[in-house]
Length: 515
Ligand code: NAP
Image (cartoon, rainbow, N blue to C red; front, side, top):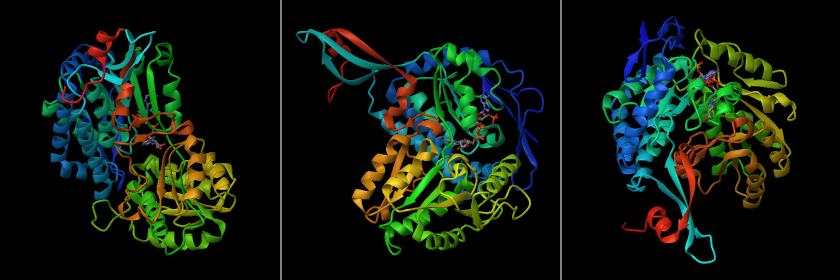
């Protein structure tokens, strides 16, 4: 059995003791272990601040962008090996593993391209300058500079490659060194990606460290120049936000947590409309891709009450296009959930939902040995039942919720998720869509509007794109990541410079074309 080490303070180091077991979801076999017990995490934080940060800041934005491009290519080179690892640890089908790995390389490439345009100065001008005094002699300009600490990235188990590298891309481009901690249970892919990053020689020593196993006392070493970006459950997010040391030092914290995402069918969409086909296709994909273990996957499907029977029949037919099986089998489109603990949680979640909803497809019974769960569709008996809007069942599970077809009622029900990452709505009625979008926007990070006009070109709502923000308020964590160059904000300090115009504007003002 493999032992996965951490890369800290310039060397690969294994922790003591048993640590976390990494399972094969198909048969429960332990494929590897990782532990961080006994590792000196304070030294790793100092290494990042004293060695990695200065080296990274010596590079220009353009050089750091080139580094990201190189990392994207280096990871892509071992794509097949990573796909195999994803099925061995994590239960990924080939398609699911590609979604994670290509997400990582694609985001790195995207940030390489955003960074190319940032120029060679060691700071970024933030907006235009402003006259502050009676005349233009007294001038103000905001700039952004890389903070002098380390970015600690704590990730969930479901996207070991993408989750790690999308955060790393923003921090490294900004000029801030990272310590990456993947979810322990599926760390095999993340560990191999970390090996490639280190061995590539593209990233200066100390700028990329990798912690394989529990976070230990890492957070207790951080101070006001450091930051923590976390992705995972709301419960862990709350613990991290309340960490006494982080609170004491006002350490920047970004939380990406769970979300009871919604898809809404508006009453105007006829059965033969392209938007209807898009709706059925996207809901089926969201339920089965990554076995429903996507933070953006739809959990609640709002359907006008008089269309429920039709949608139920069509969704059940759609789910038939996702045969369940071993991840390595070519025909499989729905693999197991990531591990046995996750399986137990999903089964318990289906049982709880079935207290207020009828199971119309699949169910809590395991279809075969291993961490397999059938794609499970329910129909709510009562749209107002709290559990529908509160319980995230992190597997191939979603519930149809009838509503009266008005935008007002759809808004009220969707917003009961208490803050979400993404809501998708399907309508060809611009007035209905506008009312709905404005009604749910304060509670959601992203709104995906499906209509006949865009059906052919649409990327599905479950896909997080580097150029748009990812995150949501309230229960979803209150965080924000990505969004092209907005993703660098978290890692940089916005500072207002005031003084004589020719100095402030000449030195720190926006670069003009051709400079
Ligand atoms: P989790 O149990 O909350 O764990 C997330 C990460 O936090 C793991 O790396 C975990 O380490 C670490 N962790 C646990 N306790 C900690 C502590 N006290 N201090 C510091 N780190 C700690 O979540 P998960 O089960 O891996 O992920 C599933 C959840 O993530 C779902 O609810 C899903 O909705 C959410 N998610 C959200 C997003 C988003 O972008 N909003 C994306 C993906 C997933 P160990 O694994 O070593 O315990």
